[in-house]
Image 1 (cartoon, rainbow, N blue to C red):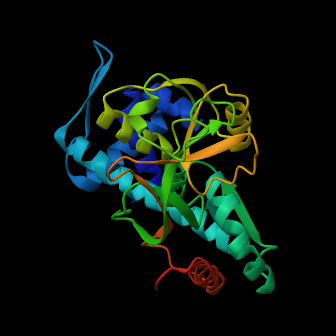
Image 2: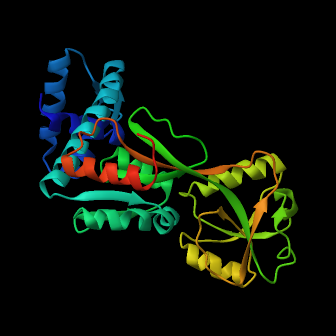
Length: 296
């Protein structure tokens, strides 16, 4: 079977039009028609039915079933290409959300340098949710991810190494600045500055707001913790971040939450179950485990 035929077929399921698929792949339309005919011969069943009068295309039950398998096969092929490309170029790709990078990476940087791995290490920054998908797709070899529940994925291994509470951050000029602890419900009428949606902090905040029956008024969003901390210092809004945020600012105060069973920021080393680690990648994993005090 020609895997290109599966790629044509998958796109045909999406576009429902032979001409559009031909344009996407920069081939002639008969090429697409022939590919579908080969697949139908291979599986002994019609996959699509063309209504030339109404210029429509119907996917048969057999076609719908094949489409599900084609999605998996093509994803695995893309993953293989990505992994082998990383191997041949001797790259180590580690995904790091910015908060995790700032707090935890200095703990492993020296060990990586001592073992000669730092020069070949490429880090990719992003929110934990986006990086989780990047690990799945093979864009990164492994990642340090944050979550509010222990991670459990069929295609990913997750090794937890730390848990930290979430806290409230306010300007030193805020009326709450003289407090050390606070209930989240006391923030009902406050403005917030906060992360964009691909950060796990959004899940934690949503959990607290549902529990306290109010929706926070987010006046500004950014992925840059330094910008958010500056705005908090200027009393533009309050912040809700994990305790590991290194703000180093005299104009910002951190308050602990008094709520029962508040969400925790759980950090884990994550990599694919199907990925065969090279000796260098295994060395990277061992350094992460040792320096982040992860049980093996």
